[in-house]
Image (cartoon, rainbow, N blue to C red; front, side, top):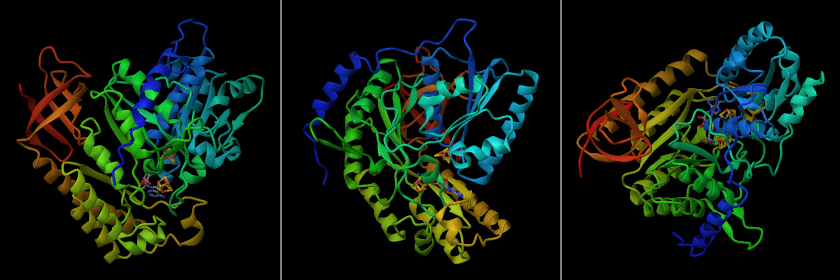
Length: 479
Ligand code: SAH
Ligand code: SF4
Ligand code: F3S
């Protein structure tokens, strides 16, 4: 049952007070002196990595480094990397070749590899990529200034220590490439789930939840700076749990969602990713209760077949997943649901693949991220199962999944024609400066002609007049 926690308001009040104090009082100084060393940072992989890059930038800015978006003029080139699939690592290695060239043109430039690939390959990366100077894992970013000094003194800087406690709770991220409207907030780190295909538990370490006060303080700070949407990030947000060391009060993910929703009714709250095994009805009731908690759940199914799900060690089966879909549709009827799907996992048969296709139909996903299985060294699946589905079969199944999902997305969006939505304006559309783009609560991108007086960060009501499989088109209506 939904638990209306009466003590939460108390927490919110304290957070507002804490905001006046030390944690989020100061904005990062964008270094302006011409002799400041400049760093350039590129990010790959999931939203968590992009969010981590903002922590890295903050750590470096604190010791006087200056951020630049121009690689050529930088003194330190950092690449925040992803190991999730082989292709992700190939992309990073290609970028490292480009950085080598910059280094040749500008000797003395430092190149640092951060994130999951740094953690997976450790010092092997320094051996394989001769021109890399720094290798820093996801829990070692506070150490970056010290590691840069070590490189300056002729050494190689490496720290890939994985922590059980680090959450960077006290660090006010420097918002990189921000639209000033939407921002990410990391609420936890690591993952304890051990899905057999997945490298994340090895690259990100044990799951730990961040202090709820610091999360609400960060959301409040963002709201006061004009941001109107925060996305709470974790590999498995539903298993968020934090205990106030002073009062012993426990904060679950549902409680946290409520705390952030209470920051201000005009601050939208999103979250990602939900794990089907942990997504509770309590979370759904909290979503239904607050208009500003967006009606959108990313609920990766991975496969629609129970035997494959068991091999994947997802710890739920098809029936459990369908039960969670039914709960969403019952409690939040206007909620959009999206998914991640892997085709061609070890031993997957054609019939089992058909179960994934039928799940896409049944779930009526608004969209999905779709991949073919890529074996990752060291994972449970790599050690236990043979990667026996030929590449062309994996790819053909992926094409079938993509084709079906595109049809379903198109149908999903067509149903929105004639409806009106509250849209948060994010900026100009990709195609025209005469049009705005923004999202509705269901996370659909909406494009519409501008209207005098409206600007990014404001809400407007849009009536949908047309739709593709990826975008809704509409016009502002007066209400
Ligand atoms: N924590 C999230 C997923 C993070 S990784 C969750 O549990 O849902 C993002 C997605 O990458 C996964 O959902 C999965 O679909 C895909 N993925 C992970 N490992 C993969 C692999 N070895 N091959 C192909 N896709 C993979
Ligand atoms: Fe990987 Fe599974 Fe953890 Fe997601 S829940 S990060 S897929 S181990
Ligand atoms: Fe990639 Fe690491 Fe995220 S492997 S998907 S960057 S947690």
